[in-house]
Image (cartoon, rainbow, N blue to C red; front, side, top):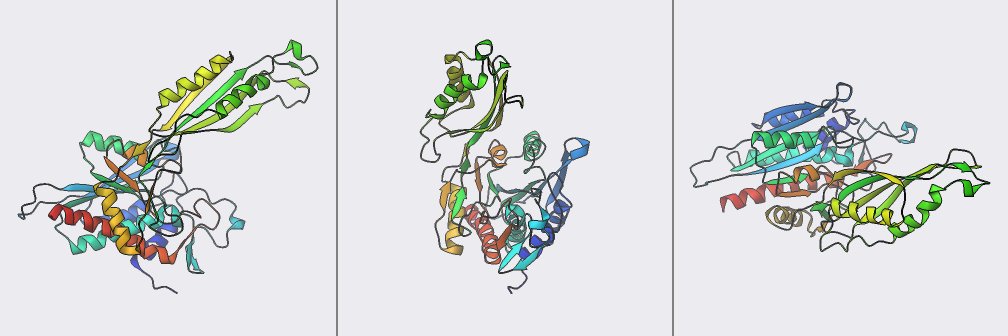
Length: 394
């Protein structure tokens, strides 16, 4: 049995909070108490409809520049979410998902990997750093939300809007998403692809299946269009992004009867796109295909987020150095995977990366994190603070 550490203890406290999205379940209160003790100023921000209020928190530890000849400071923000996805069938869990349970060298519970361990490690790393450097010129902020696993309409995006209104300037941000693969430290997300979804309704004429000449089958009309779209190379990607991907998620057609040609068919699709394409470019190219086949159609779009990229620079270098010092490996920089709240923060912060523990069990039954990954994660976050602090003093 590994000894109880401050990060493990705080992670267990957070897991015990039943914070299924959009609930925060007092996670931010717990974290805020720890931050207040370090001199952070707290700004709770509640948003959303009454039946599904979202809890957000902006916390900042300001700095008073000393007489050491330091003319400026920098602000690094730790960002993350306190909400978790639903548990799924409770009977398939080997222990209660909101009762933190240690067995076989792992900590089990909903949110262990995504992302309550990261939140706890953020706080404990900050405590250790501030205790060592109480007068650091490095300002530290926390941006927390309970709306990342949900629609993401009233969470981080609202905090970023508020920060802009306040004139707050962010220099660096680490989002605590679980980015590692086999072991903590093997992968950093230094960007994410954009997401653009569409709903296409192809119109035909309903009729009896025995008299197709009196009807117009929209499924048949869609088939060659679908083949065309599947074969398109939307772009070739670049050094940081894979090529843009177009994927169908759902096709809805038919009346439920086997002898009726439907009057319409609905196709749901999604682009995950690189910085080589824009939403406008993708929309225009797809419409051109539809128009070429002379379809009668309706098309609606939902832009979930644009791509962002942080090229190697101050923040990436500070994080890579901290990982190399702690675990002795050089992480891979990647932009793969789904979207994150980094897409909102990148609009107001020039350097945004995501880094956290291994993600193999996230959103699954029996979500867990290896105990051996917890303390290295904390020390890596502290190492980033140390590296940025040293740079300011240089």
